[in-house]
Length: 278
Image 1 (cartoon, one colour):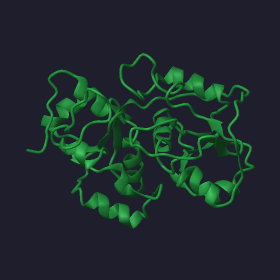
Image 2 (cartoon, rainbow, N blue to C red):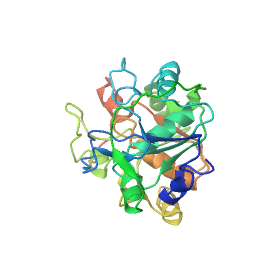
Image 3 (spheres, rainbow, N blue to C red):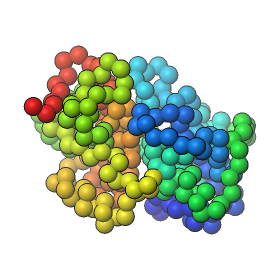
Image 4 (cartoon, rainbow, N blue to C red):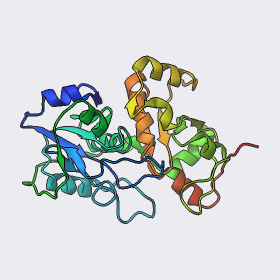
C-alpha cells in the first residue's frame, strides 16, 4: 500500500484482488470504555486477527506484548497470509486496535498493509457488504517475518533516555492518567508519567472514529514542539500508542518506535521514576 490509511471506497475498489486479505482486529473489550453494537458483524470475507490470544506473547506478564517473530509468522500462516498479500486491517470501533496490527506487520517486515480509516462503521455507512462472523479455516500461507528490532523499545532504553534524551517519548493516555489526577483502569497501577515524556491523548488525533485531516494533524504535532529526534510512543499497554504513531507517520518524518510494555510495565517495575502534577 502506498499509504498507511485507506478509505472504504478504495477497499471496495480492490475487493476482488486475489492477493487482498482483510483482517478484522476488533476486540471484545477495551480500557478506553468505547462500546459498539457491531460485535457479530464483519466485512464480507474478513479474517479474524485475534490480538489477545494468537498475536500476543503468552509468556509475557504484561498485556498485548509483541509476540516472537516465529510465533507471529506461524499465526499469520494459519490465517492464510502470504508474503505477497495486500492487507487491509480494520476494527469495529472505527480506529482503535487496527493501528496496532498495522505496526506489528511493519515491524515484522511486511510493508503492504494499511488501516481502514473509520473501520467497520465507515464501511457500513458507505453501504458495502457485511456478514455475520463465523469460524473459518484457511489454506496455510507462506508469510515470513523479518523482524526490525529498532522499532520497539524496552524499559531499559526508556529509562536511559530520561538522561540522554536521544528520543522523545509521547504518551497516548488521557491527560488525567498522564498527570496523575485520574486513576489507571488496570487495578494496582499508579497514574502519572515517565519523566520528560509529553502527552498526546489518542482521542485528539481522531474525529468520530476516523483520523483528523492531515492539516489538523500537522497542527497537533506542531504544538508538541518536536524536533528531529526519533519518537517513541507509549500508552497503557502498547495498543493506543500505535494510533498516534500512525498519525505521526502521516505528517512527520521522524523515525518511530513503540515502548511495548508502556505504562503497565513502567508502573509495575520497582524504582521506576514517576512524575505527577504537583
